[in-house]
Structures are given as C-alpha cells and as structure tokens.
Image (tube, rainbow, N blue to C red; front, side):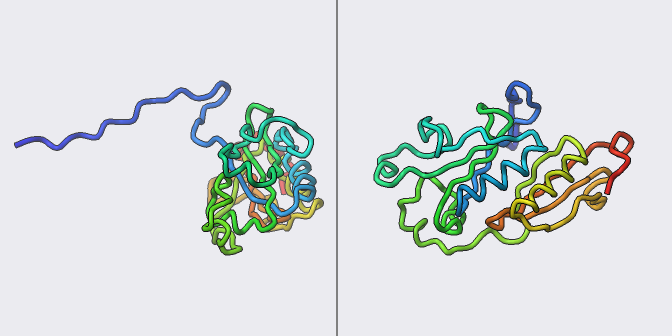
Length: 200
C-alpha cells in the first residue's frame, strides 16, 4: 500500500538587499484628487521616512514603471495620474491612482483593466470593516507626528496615538482616514524600556 506523499517545506528565498521581509512589494489605492492626496500623504508619511518619489504630473518616466499596464487598451484612454511613495525611487511601497470614482476601481483592485465593463459598472464602495493599510514607524514620536500631520492635512482621527496592549505589550499605534476615507494605521513596536518617556 502506497504511503501518502509528504508535503515538502517551501524553499527559502533570498530577501531584497537591506530587507529581511520579501513578502509585499507595494499597495495601490484609488484616489479622487491628486493634489489633495499629494498634500496629505507627503506631509503625513514624512515622519516615517517615506517620501514622494514619483509624480506622473511632473515625471516623464514610462507609466509601466508604476504598475500601469502597457496593453493596447490603455493606449485608448488618457494617461492616469499617479503618485508613488517610498524610501527611495527604487522602492515604491504605495501607489495612488487618480480616478473620478475610486470606489469603482477598489471593487476590482485591477488598475490595468479599467476598460472592462465589470470595472466600469462596479459599485462605489470600499472594502468593509477590518480593511486598512498599516505602516511601520521608527519611533513612537513618529507615530504622533504622522497622526498630527494627517489631521492637519485633511485626514480624520480614527484612533489617537497610544498603546494598544490587546495587540502586544509595546504596540504603540494611531489610526486615521485619508482624504478619500481609506483607513490607515501607523505602528511602532519599540520595547517599552527604550521608548520615549513622554508617551501619550
């Protein structure tokens, strides 16, 4: 009688230079207004060491460098306005695509297929409770600065900076909604013994 095949562990894969995590490349979100989102994200992400590294309104680089399909369908539509944020131009981790109705695109999650009827007919709705994008902060002070700058630039408070011990002893986080209603979290997990003494 044959023995059942044993599942082999996946091979270990090399991580990118300077990184010990190689799971996620980038996140793309639809936005309604490039100027409003540029103001919000440029201010809010700066304390995290993330900067505006691509702006299609001022950059002549080919659209394929920011994840837009170069298929024949795309050539029939106007170029999409895009912002890219990251620690440097070679490591964009957040792309923002301008759409008149971001909800229509968020329902499919496929920016390269905007000409399809399913995308065009999608309802104007965002993912439900539980969905959010979380960024790592280098310090608790960076969490506070992110939260303050986000609110100053059109964001909405969804959770002031502070410890969330339900998630971990040193889980210091803040939550906001951006100018389009996308929920964002920033978290620092620096151990309490080395964290700032003036914590909120």
